[in-house]
Image 1 (tube, one colour):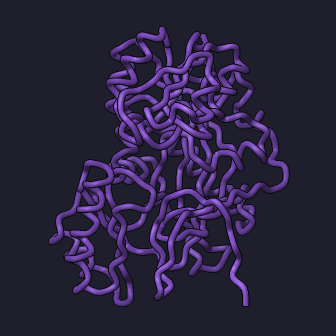
Image 2 (tube, rainbow, N blue to C red; image 1 turned 120 degrees about the horizontal axis):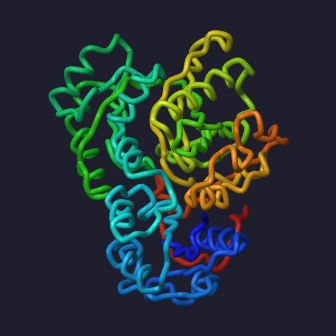
Image 3 (cartoon, helix red, strand yellow; image 1 turned 90 degrees about the vertical axis):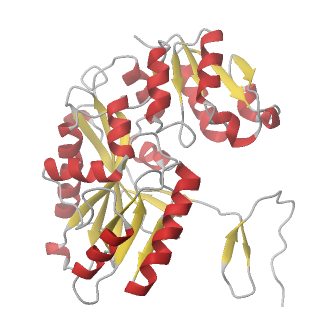
Length: 375
């Protein structure tokens, strides 16, 4: 049964998107806003809008306060959107303790895929290939030993076990770079995710980045809704998303999609999520191999291109699955998923400042006008 009242624990565009889907399903909705977001659009869209104590991101990361607000408002479900608390297993567990449905995968899956070393192990157990790398959180000495084991000319990538968004990631080409890169990754990961644990993998120098949209109902029934190509990136952050990928042969596409379903079925995936792979472009297309790298157990920013090519409202689907629907009851078993229609592209615009040497740094502020250069 669908939740009667949904609190949306997010802000901005995604909060508006979720509020609209819930309203279409006849659910009462509650939006929340930080002290500096009182005039934001999402604060005006719910049936009720409740203020949080605090300002900025910190207010939306205060899980205990959000659960308290949800209970006071009579909400029986919380949708976390993306970012903020969307992959926070402790928050999902706190929701369950309060008798509130967390709209997303169950706690065990958030814990599994929140630890990328555990996720690699789950993929291996399911027969899905991964890159050579850590079987546990790595120390700097273990990273040094792994680098020494690589073939001549190979490089290594250091990654944060938790989090995402390209933070806590460094490529190491030479042994003398390792100690500094490792410490920078550890510091960045600790600051961003509260967890400084790292792991290492062999760097795949020439790769296409492919992610597969999965939906499941927790019974082991899983369907894939096609793939997205997010190979165009900067600083390990995605800039362009295309669905479906224009560069995959039919055979390779089916192998990747099947691997995603295989892993999703093995862990009895529920709700929606994205399973990410790298395709080795150093090999001929008919022999190209691929590896699993991680899964994002949540709605993603780029879900909209999948919605466009499938016609399936992923946010509505999330809410229905959270209410106990099955893939069969939603007519979303694999043979019932519509054929993809055309292509869809999402392009992200970054706010940055440029240094004299051409390097860029993240920036913030208000864009009031744009004057293109002349001359």
